Image (spheres, rainbow, N blue to C red):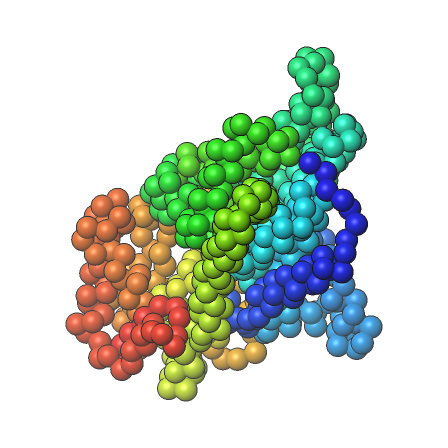
Length: 575
């Protein structure tokens, strides 16, 4: 049903209020934990975006498609131009120096881009609800999306999913227009934006199914020739969108295939981060609450009888993504973000339908109408309460920062430390400490040997990719400004059959004087855990190391995760 396009003052007031609320939820706390980087997926994308500045636009890394990295790179280009024009940067070396010593602006840029994409999604949902259904559908659809906790949380990370969701929302504009005006051109433009979305996050390519359905609905009847021609054109145009957004997925297809195949194998069948088949459904239930989830289910039931073309497209998109996520092992709440604009529209439309139905019920209808609006508003407040918890947690100080401050105050630089660590991103499980030249030597030697033996190496449990880590640490060492600490890493790989530690005696002979232990990491190797069951021998090596540290060392400090600090719990031992 096509609604009137005229916007009243009431429309603008509602839209403005919703956008102000959305902007507050998404921009408040955007700089959490910076300049320290504790969420390493952000670093993966930002590092590669900056690496394009070296002149090679091939990411050599395809676990994520490249378009988001290109967007970051162009944003960084504007930052450099502004900094150069104002005298902040005299050369690109100044910008690199800033990144290695205070990367705040680089990560804040990615987070800002995501928050902006999320707000644009809200605008699009309001526009579609208002244009095709009405005022109430627009208000509630955009309100549901504004308050959805997963979209608020994801806006605070420099990751791919919200930008990809924005492209899908733009695609919906053209799909709906194509159905309403019977325009093949609009359908093809919608397909192009699905290609761009897939060039940002691979699984958004599933939306091509809804585009094919939209083309069938545009035709209005089963016309085999037109359907075949339309499907071919949709496939070609969406591929062109993908190619323009991530060209080296085609130009460097050998590397892309190796990475994509390894990633797909892990996603489909992995023992880490495995969730049950109903996890996507539970994520929606906990995200928007039971009442709104029931309205979403009711929308599906009513659609079986109504067969509204636009809602068919929305449901095809939602169900294809949910079916995919239910049938893979590696699935998390943020993987379902791409369905939220469609799901929000379906909920808003359902609310409007119920309101119209209640208004037709004579005297009792008034009370049904009022009661239903109160219930719907209360459901939105539930999401708002969850957002309060998210924003409060983001603003809390991380225990890794507290540990860093304690170390800098109580342990002189130059001291040798045994520290919990990621292999490439040292702050993943431990504090962000300045590194000594000896530490850089150890890391670069290890990484260069790996790359010489096999440049396509496993990174954790996720993918094969060209690391380029040797070059990264060589550059980081160049811009290191302090004496730093000599760090011996306790590395935890996603592949349990690889053990990256020695016994305690080895580290003591190297001159290690302190050990910084992450209790969460230690607990992962206890008897009966998933890691211990996967490789009892490897888990025993780690478990023995922890036991020896506690027996040999003297506990000098403990830091606990609590209501006022987020992160991990740490113990520091002195030998």
